[in-house]
Image (cartoon, helix red, strand yellow):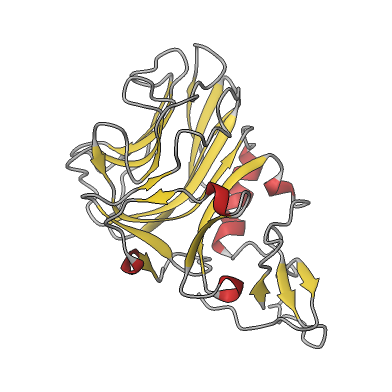
Amino acid sequence: MELSGLFPVNKHASLNRDKVGWWMVLPQHRWGGGPVWRDLMRGRNGDGVFESSMTAGDWVRSSRPGSLGGAIDLDGTDDHVDLGASYDVLNGVGAMTVAFWAFFRDATFPGFDGVIGLGENTNRQVWVYGQNGSNTLNFRIGTSSASTGDIAIVSNAITANTWTHYTLTWDGTNGALYEDGGAPITDTSTGNTALTLSTQERFFGEIDGFGRMDGQLDDIGFWDRGLSATEAQALFQASKTGYRQELNWLVTRAKAPAVAAGNALPHVLAHDHFAGGMTS
């Protein structure tokens, strides 16, 4: 079974409603060459630009649950992905969700290590970064308090060299952080009700003016609405089992996918000439 090259996303799946960005490392399949990093919602136009020091060795096989092909490996020194100032899918929104898998080699975060940085240091709109010396991540959504974040949530303690799934939701007032689909950690915003990104910095693996991430990232998603608690928990389950309903899979009509007892059938596009073995 193989991911569709032309139409990878099942846009009818409920978890994909209002999803505006979805970055993953995918195996070779139809794109040729080695593994590729793709924004599945926008194709190559939304992939972002890798720091020039990053090489093919920075696409690595991943041990994370549900991995489709690997992850990007960031060295904590000069590796990062720059989405560019024109990537404006969250500019002006009054609600949003960001979700991702992360693996940290050093959870003490000596340089306030950046994970996701939307907005400059003086305009921290969506920032996720390691708190220096604390073994925790800070999640900030900046509306009225642009320098510190109007939504401010601190994660539970992080264990180094372990994959964890994070989902941060904001409905315009209430913010919630879900770790591996668990109980939410919450905060409430009191300021403006829209993000302002216009020409600001947009990074994965870095925040403006501080450190860079030492570890691995994969499966980063943006929505222009706040997912519900039920959806956030369902997202974790879907991600760790390889998005059987949220992605379009190709099989030959002569071969039906094997399904373990109790599992849902994957969303399949029947195909006569293109089939292969999916690896993780």
